[in-house]
Image (cartoon, rainbow, N blue to C red; front, side, top):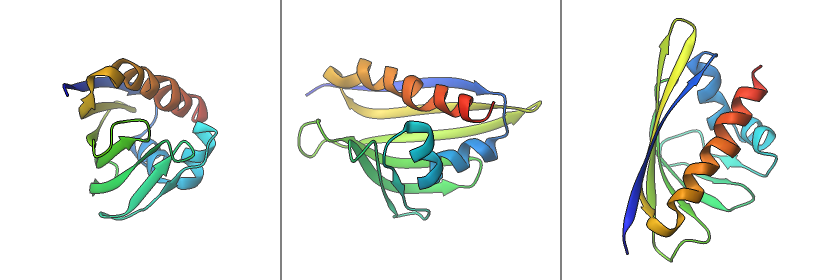
Amino acid sequence: MSDKTIKLKVIFNIKAEKIYSALMSSKLQSQFTGSKCVIGKKVGGRFSAFDDYASGKNLELVPNKKIVQSWRASDWPKGVVSKINFEFEETKGKTILTFTQTGVPEEFAKEIERGWGEYYWNPIKEMFK
């Protein structure tokens, strides 16, 4: 099976701390996605999002700087796991989020890439207007 890498840069008009908090808070992520999300706060902690559609584990956490997680979707082939990396860089009151997801099954890549914007980046921007 062939896999793809998704690379995105997103600019937010808020501090990195707010984005990091939104991504690492069960309550805030449930709020901006409109679905059940449960997120462990420590390395090795597990998470599930979108009513268990996505799940994984925290691999590296550097508050307000970096989140690295294993990530898989429930409709992917058994045993297929990708890796996501969120890196935050603050500059002049804005935050540049560099997002990379490796190991995405090719047949799901376009849908997953679109989903990050539709279900994460845009709702986070709306939440902190």
